[in-house]
Image 1 (cartoon, rainbow, N blue to C red):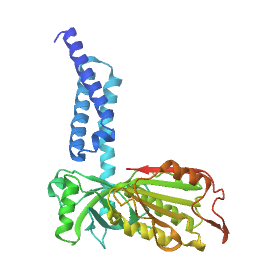
Image 2 (image 1 turned 90 degrees about the vertical axis):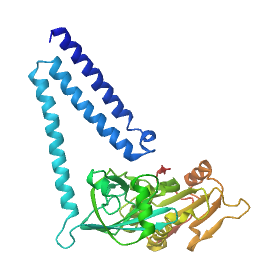
Image 3 (image 1 turned 180 degrees about the vertical axis):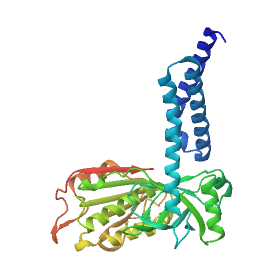
Image 4 (image 1 turned 120 degrees about the vertical axis):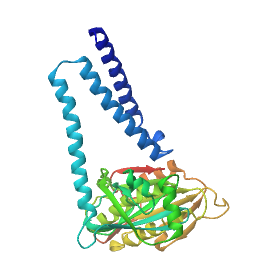
Length: 346
């Protein structure tokens, strides 16, 4: 092959590799991942393989530098080493002598699916983390093809967790199969997982925390709610006021996370501090109905319509919602309690 043909070939492979890299970066957008996670995963894997092959051919065709060839050989080595370490971590997490594998129990929660996972080994869980999950009894094909699915950890047992809770929104593919399995039986399924993955957000350094969620977005807020209240009870966080705002479309949808929200309200009892307030707005709730208060101390409120976030944030900045207690001394609402952070998930 002539020198000019080799240069043309190298340029062609270089253009293809560059285009593949751009597509990989663009595919990180949630807009492209949401419609079908399974389809996104397969496309991502194919494009990544295309990038690796074309970059290798580009360097082989156009460069005689030994350094370039060495670098392109190091990358697969690092990738394979990382995969090996990940496999060791997965085996360690999933197998123990007293309990040889994890067990998953599925149950319906309205239109949602609750998933409880008992793990063989205890480990520390942080809010904002997720795991990749395989359940062969629900989808054996996904297990054979190593097609894992990420799920945010909504709750866990205190201390070093042996049980994890998840809130799953049935859509297509694996989540739809989970919903069908939950309707058939509540027997435990053998499960395998990797993780935990994800980096927690340090919301405990803020005096006031406003959490905003719509629909199934509540699953992403619940772990931070749990961690903040546990940290407050142990005097480990700066937070002195938490307001959870949950926007729903239809009455009754709160059953998705009712038990987890109730658990948070029950745990919020240190020195009668009651730093948590929960406001649930339902779009299709009759507008002529007055706001409904449930629970003790008026901390759980149901409203009609959609949330006026600007109004609520202004009230939060003035400290109007929750009384604050420090060392058993009660302070009236309106007391300054540190900087405010707003977290949201739809």
